[in-house]
Amino acid sequence: MAISVKICGLTEAAGLAAAVEAGARYVGFVFFPKSPRHVTPEAAAELAAQVPLGVAKVGLFVDPDDAALEAVLARVPLDLIQLHGAETPARVAEVKARSGLPVMKAVGIADPQDLDQLWDYGLVADMLLIDAKPPKDAPLPGGNGLAFDWRLLAGRQILKPWLLAGGLTPENVAEAIRLTRAPGIDVSSGVESAPGIKDPQRIRNFIARATAPIL
Image (cartoon, rainbow, N blue to C red; front, side, top):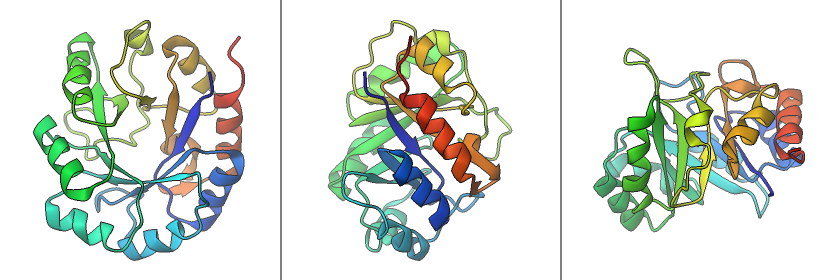
């Protein structure tokens, strides 16, 4: 099984280049001002211009209104919208229809009851991102470096293509894939040297270990 890797929260050219050269299938730009990985549409457009064909450009939004989405889409040639807030299935369908782009919905998991959302969102989203549910007092909906119990996904059939996220690092990504059989992996803080600053060597190590054969 070929594993797709998404490197999210890219803010500068060195991290982007390392992701692309190492074989990332997706590169993510965060349009959420509270995040240390936030980029402006103008900065994202400059980075997007450096992304080769075959690598999907993903825009991460948190409960965006239509104006916020349109402001980014007018400047940045995204291939995929990632919704990482409390968007309802109806809102996911609306964003997909208004933008004309495929939508990936993030679903936070902490216990077995949270898994029911995967069906609801799978009916409307093109892809799912299965992440650790943030603590109630967390300022960010993702990128917190937290993992959930990956065994919750063992043997589970997911309706749509999906990526595993949450607390992944070069050191644990192989184990995460072994336990979940995830077809794709998303990482942000796990390949950083500081919040918002990607470490090219950690990116290379992460992708190498994520895509190595699982024994």
